Length: 189
Image (cartoon, rainbow, N blue to C red; front, side):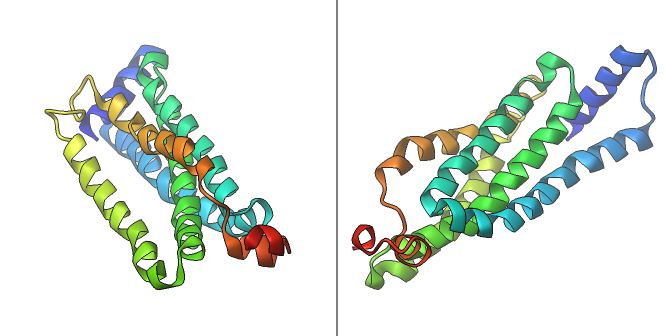
């Protein structure tokens, strides 16, 4: 947060010739932090209709667009000298999280065999916790949390998205979606 706040102040100074006051920097940082849960709320609201209209698998694939755009925005923000790109990036990352936290457990639970359904549904929560721990480790100053590398840290969420884009097309669509939402009994079986 310290490096991004410094980046905001430096960017503003280069644009206007005037340095930001500490309370304005705090306000901008608050907007940046708040953009993520607002995006999450937006993603959670659109997740249900998205899962019904597009299906679970296609929704998860399409959801990767949000995180790829977010990674590009945050990764190039310093080069573009735009802290607004970070705010927008945080919003899109939140949308991705809101959609995936709703549709991913749904897809896993609906696609798993009956005797494995509970264990498979729990993998989503387990990998979320693992992702949080991994983010903390990668965010250490010695890795990607340094003054020069923070844009890469913010853009590193593209890695799971690329893995999902590579692997998910080979997975089947949710049988429940095929049968109940689309009425396609043959594909469901």
